[in-house]
Image (cartoon, rainbow, N blue to C red):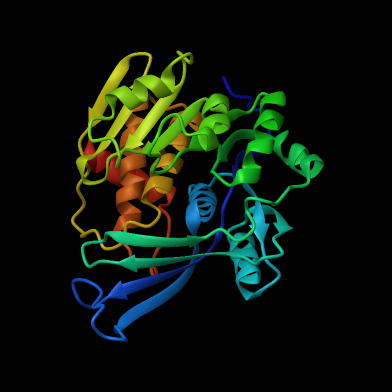
Length: 304
């Protein structure tokens, strides 16, 4: 049981910045010419951006811990978090605000070029972070190097910890070890694990109560729990997939809100997470808005 006497539902920890989405008009980049014409759109994104905005859109009392630079992009991030009602603890990265350039193919696939600026050397204000974490029911952590310092602080206050391992390639990756060890719930992309059952077993080894959720893209979703491994087919909406940015983060937010914060059964929470992810995939960057409670309820009732 997670505590219910806290004034924050979720604290998101990790990377946030401005993404430039480059929508190609052709099927691919033409490297034979100097200039390719495209539609380029900037928006606040990255794992921490999509996750914190997602929790807030679902009506959850949300805070965010991360870094921005003293630049236009950092001010834009601050304004967007404030607009969404998210309490932000932002420390300064002297190298600037995180940036991503995402080349978007016409079927929604992407190639991502990520600039994490000074995330390997940054050190947060641990006392300020401790004060914020003590108010949380749930902490959702991403893979910035400095984030590992906050994991023991969350544990001190009995906060449930979820971590997103993203597109992990090696399960014994020493960089991810702290995140794996401290997590009650793990999310990961199965892109490097065509059959994710062995990976899930290893991620749950020594943690019998741990939940592991794998996003499988067009193949659906997989859940590992003490009841075993269960596969869930993809969900279908009438609108096409146009942009997969934020899909994994929306899956995590939908699942965590539904199961951890609302107490819904695992199967329902997986479906709601999938619907949240599919919703965000149907929107290009200039229209991208995370799902709302009423829209999620509507899609959930249709899908059962």
